[in-house]
Amino acid sequence: MSSYLHVRNVLVSLAPNGNWMVTYSEDAQTGGVGIQQTVIRSDSMDKARETPSNMPADPSANKAAEASASSGIAKLTKRAAITQIIAAVVANITIISSGMGIGFPSIAMMELTNSTTSVVLTESEASWFASITSIMCPFGGLLSGYLLDKVGRKRTLYCINIISVISWAIMSFASRTDASVLFVELIVARVIIGIAIGLSSTPASVYAAEVAHPRLRGRLTLLTAGCTGIGMLLVYSLGYMFKEDWRYVCTICGVFTGVSLITVIPLPESPSWLVGKRRPQDAERYLKVIRAIKEDNHPEIKAEIKSLEENVARFRSSETKKSSKLVQLKKPEVYKPLSIMCIFFLFQQFSGIFVIIVYAASFSVDAGVAIDPFLSAVLVGLTRVVTTVLMSFISDKFGRRPPALFSGFGMACCMFGLAACAVFPVADTQYNWIPTALLVAFIFTATLGFLTLPFSMNAEVYPTKIRGFASGLTIFFGYTMSFIILKSYPTMVSAIGNENVFLFFGLVALLGIVFVYFFLPETKGRTLQDIEDYFRGGKEANASEVDKQASKA
Image (cartoon, rainbow, N blue to C red; front, side):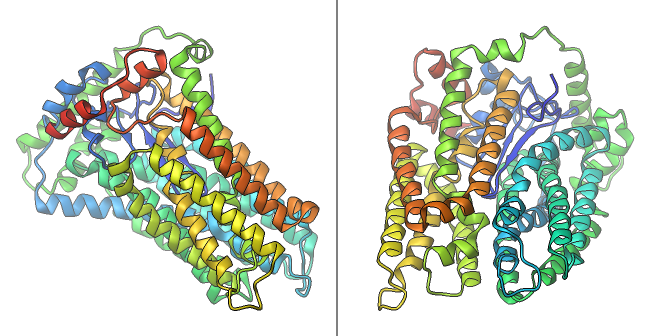
């Protein structure tokens, strides 16, 4: 069954909010690494969720796996840590371009729909320009899994940068005289960059996970989310500096992506992939660089290569009969979390979060924000980046449900406040700061829950054998809902007015609170097997006991 949802290496999900969910499972073949891991945040449960590369991917073997996490892995020295961090950072520079592509419509839309400019897009054309990437991202994700296996991690990063440069170049030299030609050029460019965004969803995280020592892996795989947010913030800032012509922004983004392409050249290829392709000598050579070991025939390097080779052999000999995906979907431990996560994504999309991210500048005008709309977009990007960092600590302490409840409540209050400001304008009063404060508060509260949790929890709630398929199916649903709301937003504003659109978003957020309270499970402090048992109807895990076990690991 061919699908984006079932890539060979890993399932990594991206949305315009910049959050990436990385899922390794039995269903996701890592080209010889043989790890089962859910990388979401660096909370106390990371160790309980990770089966090291030299251990079997069996949920029941978690405790034994944790006890030998470092077996077969060269020890982490300071020099090796610096080398691995630099390699992961360089690989993730590619993701900054993807973040730029996500946020670009926000800063281009103002000029493209301005009737005083030489070429103007219609409302329908502008909405296609903003939303088309949501449809193309899953296809890029499908292509990513294929390329990672066939050509390797490093060459896949090359492909992403080359495709992105082509997209930025098309927009940089887009027509200045013919609106119909401009529209075609923009759609072609956005289709290309949509594929690039989906394509970039996997390689950097996979590369970081495979070159990093287990002690660094969790932190380094989180670089992807941060780099996406940085990319969005950068493109918002460039839009503020070059608000008269978005083509300059495209040129700068294209040059940046070209530089990113050059920085990939010195990166060593993943030893895990090389072993999977029966190139142990090359794998050993690059592993020595990554582990900062100069000696030939070093015992730690030999041991790690042997561990990787054993995993390859074990994986190739472990083919067993598996029931079809459709049969698996009928099981309660699958259809229950699938239903919950799809509904959670529905509330996420229709509460207006992605509308603000993609239409940040024009939305600020609709909301009556007093400051420059491009500066408002910068505030949106900055708030999102800062809150994403805070979210990792908040989730560690409070779990998933409390932040989600607070997030929905805050979002609803902010949207109701914006609706009130639309009915009773405050632009020419001493209270003209209120819409700006409400917009920033909305992004802050959204990032604490509704913006981030659907993606992170999507990696936790499914059984291992179906996780790749089910998680991907959920993300595909989320992309579809994203396309619908982004395409519909301009029409909604024209049809029912700003105040009613804001009211609609607020009511959806309010209903989302009810959904979270009654249906969203708490996953903090529970192993993946505990969560699976919970949905199957078995005994629910004791969170405190699991936390204690994880802290000892």
